[in-house]
Image (cartoon, rainbow, N blue to C red; front, side):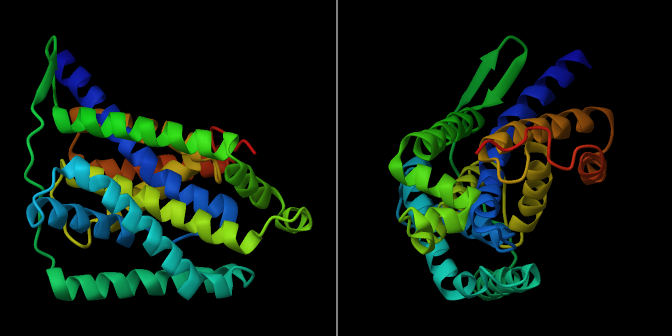
Length: 286
């Protein structure tokens, strides 16, 4: 039991890093654009297929293909913002929800027609890493390292670069930022693109160790909502901590009970956090 407990905890924590990256995209868009992106799961799923085709058809190493998937996510996010989101940024919240939900349904409907709902998987063996009685697939280790690098790069970008400071200024007060000469429209578009890029990176990493379909993104989108609440709305770095909490919880729950209880417990935690600490465990830093 102790061996299984430790192995499940480690595995859950490693997956939690990837969950955290997925949630960073969602919370970044909310923190800056003030929109809940319901197309988040569809972007995750598209990134999985993007990595699959680059690895299978183009013959690229999945981790070489990952930056290409990330760039595709950035461009897709910018396009979604210009076409569907820009017009509803200042509209009532329901308008933005409907706009991103429409994008979600269009992506899923089109992709289902092309790919069907059959499962796909990226065939890649990165070996295994053993430490005592715990053995971890190499893909988990690489995904964790990639998630840490992405998180570090995001932190440096937001808190050290001129553009990152402009993003934070727009997130704090869009009107005041405009008075200081910051082009808020461009910053909003960039932020939305960065949020979808983070989702694409997470989707690509998940594809290296789990089978997927075009509908797989929905489950990870729901997990992202739980993580965003745990980490604090609008706090990208808190999302990583929330991802670790959720990942470890998933790993431990499956030791003591059936995996079918995982979503029940996750959303029970979601409700408890909303009631007890609605700003999240880690309040956002501006």
